[in-house]
Length: 174
Length: 230
Image 1 (cartoon, rainbow over the protein chains, first blue to last red):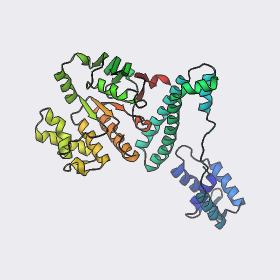
Image 2: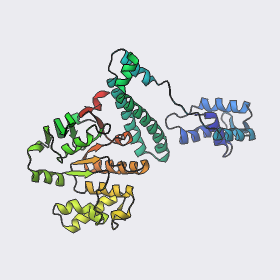
Image 3: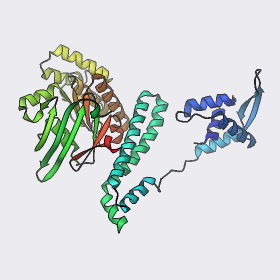
Image 4: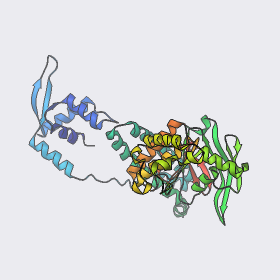
């Protein structure tokens, strides 16, 4: 995920302090990994340097200085371009699972067992995500669904590979 | 959660079944505990539906043993087996389970009516189940007037109306899109858990299997318990 673009986008709603940005980010996107304050301030310094945000004001409230950031026009354009640009699909062509299967076949180990163990682990995680999804709100459901569809695709590959093991074995051993 | 931690409700050992020259089951074993949800997975033609039919007493295996609550299923008379299916088992399939001439409420009440329960109490219980499955507004409609997803929720309500100890679900979401399928699965498993009903869930969809407590895989007529694979 591009943290800088996401923080920039959040600023489109109006100027915010670093703490406020972190809190809003965590509410929407921090399910698995909340932001560290350090990440927010480092990102804001970089955005400031690149002219994508500006300091809208500084408050002290008797404590340390707190900068309020606002997005610039260049920042808005940057967010717009980021949203319009498609993400590169990740085909995982060099899957570690494929390597393991081939190596098991080459070393006369059970590739069937390897695939079953992996399958069980995938299903364990899918059960965990399904429980989380059922107990969660719509945001949780969408985040979990994304992970579930990826795991499901892996499982389809595991099944297909299990069905083709004999052929693969004869090819890699020839 | 595995069958090992709780006493078994149903166990099957060394089941074999052949259709003509084609072996469907070849020494398959299976076990499910009270209240447990077990997914039975496997490729098409692997024998998973045959396994369900044998476990439910619909089709007798050629060889093997099936015990349900310490009773030998295979030595029961046909009448006793039918009574067991009617009173202690529930069934939900992929297609065509609802009687088109009856309303949804009457469909759900049907298993109770067949067991001799009077119309009023049967329909009161049916209404309760329709509400649990969030389709109480369909009570007066006939199956032809409701969508596939709604019809399947009515079918799930019917499968649970007699408080079965064991529910057999064969591809219960196979004819539904993923959103409706998820909805049906969530409601089915929640209602079964609430009632303490064990579920044998045959499915080829891993997202559906993820609603279970554990899964077994049928391959070439044999059963592999995936809990032991990790």
